Length: 213
Image 1 (cartoon, rainbow, N blue to C red):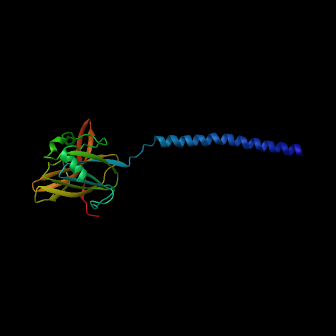
Image 2: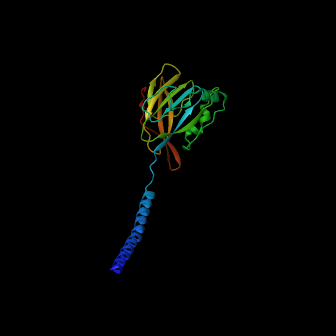
Image 3: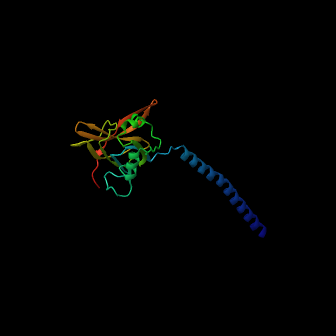
């Protein structure tokens, strides 16, 4: 009787071990297949990039993830141009460009042509969330205009102009803010920087006037 129980116990243990050793490789194979499937799925970018221009006498504020304009001293406002440090650097000609790798455009390559008296032109590039609105406050006074193809028009009675705009970037896309004069009107806008067959194009994107928050 004891021998029969002992034999049955040994057979149960042996069977349980056998099931465990067979099951373990199957689980590992499943995990490996899941890892391979995850690795083959391309990651979707959650950011875009934008280039803002500045110089002494210009304003370029960036409001990420916002469809409206907050105050000058609000948290999270990027002052690419218009802060005291940027104005001083432009004034003495010691300000430098800050690039994240956005392809060069005709404007950025010929930026020195925008220099004014005690007003060196420069650009700075920023990451912005894709698929969510970001807003810009752009202002220029007695400085050369930047390239623009489309945008929001603002009435002006003199040589200065400022405007607030908002747009929603595509994932992984690069952009460049712009400004131009048309008679007594100035226009602020945003262009997508597109590289086709080795050539860089500026494609206008839809923008809207941004209200105050």
